Every structure is written in C-alpha cells, then in structure tokens.
Image (cartoon, rainbow, N blue to C red; front, side):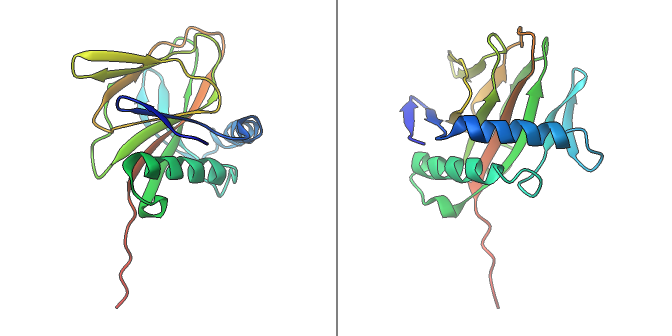
Length: 178
C-alpha cells in the first residue's frame, strides 16, 4: 500500500484488496448478527458501528497492519508507536452517516477502508473550515484524515449495501514493568 496525500487527506490502496475484501465481507456476514457481536451508535434504524475482531476475521490483521503503517507514515512516527481501534460500518440503501468528528480522546488520525462500494452508495464528505471536499470511494481504498475534521457520508442511493471499516489511530499504550 503506497501513501499519497492531498491537503489534509491521505490515500492508499491495499495490495491484494480483492482477496482480503472477499474474506472481510464473508466474515462480516457471518458475525454481524451474532448475539456476542457488540454494536453501537444506533441512528436511523441501524447500528453504525459493528465490532468484529481479528479473532473472528483473521484477514483484518493484514488490513490493520497496512493501515497502521500508512498512519505512521502520515504522522511521521513509527507504526509500532500507534494502536488502532476499528469497527465495521454497513450502510444500506437510503441510509447515510451524519456529520461528526473523532476527536473525543487521544486520536491522532482517523480513517476509513472500503470493502464493498456499489455505484452511488455515498461519498465521504469532509468539511474543512470553509471548504468542502468529497471523496468517491472504491473497493480497496484507504482514506486517512485528522480526527477533528468534520465528516459525513452522503445517502446510499444504490440498490445494495456499502461496507467499510472505520479506524482511529492513537498512541500505543506503554506497559511499564516494576
């Protein structure tokens, strides 16, 4: 995955995305409705955040490792000094994600990785002061941005669901030993 940037946005494309995305899609389908799967942010009749980890979908490790490496590159720090929190976001036809930020705690960078992106399934809309940028996603694309940037996802006008993985990167927790 190579990193490109435009203003305050960073872009990458995952090598081997088709294979990884197939496994992520299948794993999400198996685990999203499982009673032990945690879900949060209930808006508009759906949970925006669905938490399924690498213990259930091992292919997440490849994605998260690549994303953490690019986040480190964007921040100018070694990847192993970062930790990543993540969640799946499945957005069906007619659904959208309201404007929000991710600067609630110690986040240094936020991001989204796209798995399934039907045509017209919504754009990432970034509001940066008095400017507005739209990103048309495609499968395998990773977008990184500062956590204090207000962003939203426009309405999914396609006939199918869009699936992505949201991420927040923060400093790795240091474990001290006596």
